[in-house]
Amino acid sequence: MSTSIASPTVDTPRKIAAAKSSGSGSSNGFGATQLLSWALPVGLIVVWQIAAQLGWLSSRILPEPWAVLRAAWNLSVSGELWTHLGVSTGRAASGFAVGGGLGLLLGLLTGTFRQAEVLLDTTLQMVRNIPALALIPLMILWFGIDETSKLFLVSVGVFFPIYLNTFHGIRSVDKGLIEMAKSYGLSGWPLYRDVILPGALPSILVGVRFALGLVWVLLIVAETISAQAGIGYMTMNAREFLQTDVVLVGILLYALLGKLADVLARSLEKFWLRWHPGYQ
Image (tube, rainbow, N blue to C red; front, side, top):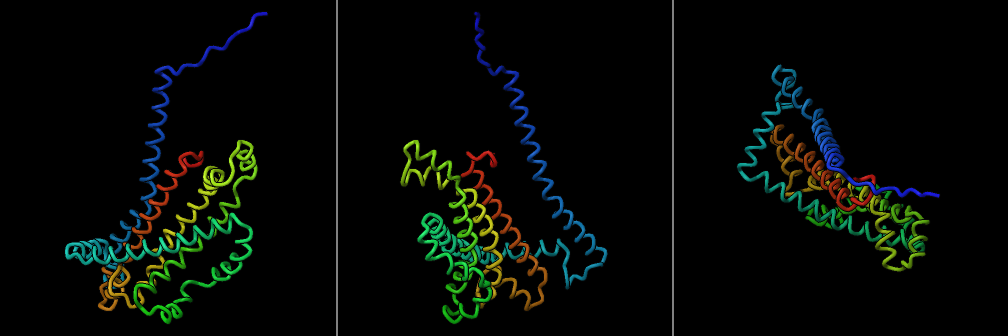
């Protein structure tokens, strides 16, 4: 009886070229998608400019985009914009580091140990249902109106998205995958590091992405509490002098910073989850 041996497949130059062409096509498609995502914001700005030039919008209520751009340029040249931007960025980073770090640690703790969940989770869930803004009077009584009160408000707000997603990620790891890893001799810290944490990482990064956007929302409120610098202070000060263009500069800065934070979070997802089929 004759047996046939299958010859090994070899990637010919034509196949390699086809693969590269396919990759190039997908890259071009990605670039087109990115451009398309900015079509609506650009379109809104164009409509805004046209409506202002036709007199449909009062300059006192909503200045034209060029007026807002001029105000941003003047603030940049004077250095005032960069000062306020640096202060706000520092507050956001500090609040995220404190609140996010505690949320990650407690999420890992309660997700890993049932005893910790029983001890802590009920209390944390009750605190979670208290709106962060409702804590402002108590926060002022505790910390006054200095930087500590602003840090506290931002930290409390970003704590729970990361805590909940970390807890959910740890508990959602496939039990069959854990058992299979144990059958290969993994246990203790190696099992936790190589199987459980990577399995929980997609959920954790969703919490990070949500918290990075939320931090700027909370910062708007925090910087209206007797701040002496920051984008929120700049915006409230401009309101007192009816400088609507400067107010819009502050609002648009918050929007751009939120978008940059989202881009950062997505970049972290692509880097840390490059092994995951859904992020390739």
